[in-house]
Length: 214
Length: 214
Image (cartoon, rainbow over all chains, first blue to last red; front, side, top):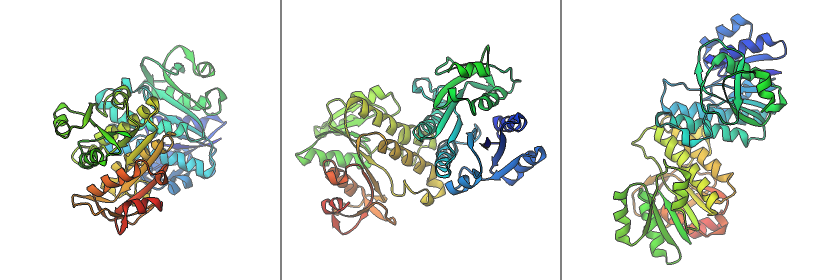
């Protein structure tokens, strides 16, 4: 599969693009918003597409041309305000989903966040972020696309272990970004996780095994 | 019909509650978030329910008890940040819709905003607000409730004229809040506007006539 990675320049995005590139079975296309983000991917020999999540659906759909799947791992990040959370994490996701529907790209993987489906766990300062993720996830679920919604716990920059705990609901815990990227890779064409949402943290199970039990 | 007015203490809300109260055909129940907002409605002899859009769905559902319809005219307003836009205008609306589904209140009217369904018209500083309204409207449309989405143009405090222009898409223009309240009143049990969304500004047509042409 050729996979459009939305948010390719992010911390999970960069690792995932490189894993895809080395996988031998899939090919990445990195969607980035600024010209100066292209060189990182050029150096890897990875195809890029310039498009902004704050732009039009047409712009995103054009970036999707020739792809078989979309992985959405973009986020406005913690340093911008809730206005960007609305524009990027919610509406950027909604526009990407609509672009996939329009262009007939039927496989869509979303990097969400643990607790996004449980309002009772939304602590005050994080609540606006969770609102955006919650509704982006709901839009994807209702889209008719073949979705997988991956909700990692606390993201760390530790090296991946390749071992996780995955379940519809977990009590929280950390997970290295590298392992989230690996979960995305293993989920791409694993039918056990089609049309499912699950939470994932570091654990004892090999990724493939954990996914097959979902 | 007994109508739960969500955002009763707002500028449109207060006028709408008073119109309902005088209508003879419908009865308002004013949902407000703070105890000090109750006295205004007590003085009118209007029933109130204390509940916050930042609270639980259960809390909102409880306020809805005994009602036949919900009018959502709440908004976080221009003086708070985009975090409150996410929590109130989007998720508060989503929770109110879910509360209506749970309690079997099938009629739901939403005060939205002109252009909420057309991203190309979202000017920069208003874009986060439009994202929230756009997705709240979409959640209502997909809810299975009998909805009416009213999208007024620029709101003014002029006296109402009782005359409007209403259409699926308009080019913009002002409308007094009093006329928006009157459009809500006329829409409540008018089957012509069931499961419809329309934009409305001041115009030449008597309200009932304009609605019947939609």
